Structures are given as structure tokens and as C-alpha cells.
Image (cartoon, rainbow, N blue to C red; front, side, top):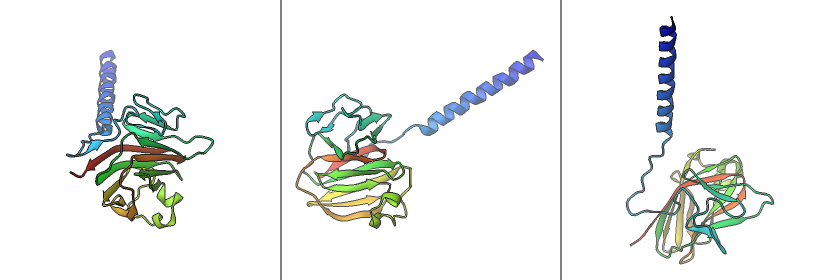
Length: 197
């Protein structure tokens, strides 16, 4: 009888351990950087990012805690008072480029991606708008979505999951990449850029 109970408990323990391992593998991020792309975010800290007068190299959060790095994700944390605060790459990108990233928005969150200074609205599009974005059919609320920004000849073509956000957004000849912390939590990951030769 004791051996039977032990065997049942042992088999249950093995099933729990195997189930946990399966979940861990299923949640592992198998993302690989495409050839020619550089990562703008190392996934561990804010190296390469900062405010205009602050460099966050080696730090896992900004001085005001508006931005933090954790588990491969750059998190935009809501803060009061509500202020527009932008984190920038510490380098500029003068050549034509393709910027790719994924974002996940909290309900009604409002952020932005700055492309050499001009802003592309990045938010919970179906709720927070603007109206021209409320008709997006491929946007996935509170899930990961991909933004692709192609800059060529001073103009940015921007898409979300393949749908056009901006056909021809004028951008200056050079500048950094930035993210805005405005309202609600926003998460960014897999932030990468490929410059033209």
C-alpha cells in the first residue's frame, strides 16, 4: 500500500516537473537577429539610451523610473505627474535604414516612436486612436505587434503588422531613435535597425 502511494506521488511529481519544463521551453524567446541588423536594446539594461543630458549605460532603469529594462523588454512605466519624457538612443542614424520592433500596449496606453525626432504614434490604436488608426484590422490589443519603419531619402514609411500607419512621414537628414512615456504602460522588444550601405 505504501509503495502504491509512493508510486502515484512519484508519477505525479514527474508529470509536474515535465509540465513545468514544457512551459519554460514554450515561453523561451527564440528570436534571432536578422543578417545586417544591429540591436538597439540589449534586453538587460539601458546601455545606449538616455535623456538628452543623462546616459543610462549599465543602468536597468532611468533616474525617474519611467523606463526600465527587464527580461528582454524595454518598459515604459506610467508616472505622475503625467509628463512627456523621451528616451533617446545615444547615437544618430544619418543613412537610410529599416527599423523593426515589437510593442505591447496596456489598455488605452499612449506612447510614441521618434524617428530622427518626428513622432510616429504608438499606442493602443483601437482605443487611443487617432481615428485613422482605429480601423486597423491586424492590430492585436494587449498582445505583441510589429512596427516596421523604412526610412529612404528623408521620408519614413511606417507599418503595424503590415498595415500602413504613415505612407510618407518627413524626417530630418539625421537623428536618434526615441520612445515617449506619456500614458499607461507600453513594452518594446526586439528593437533592431539595418542601415543602408
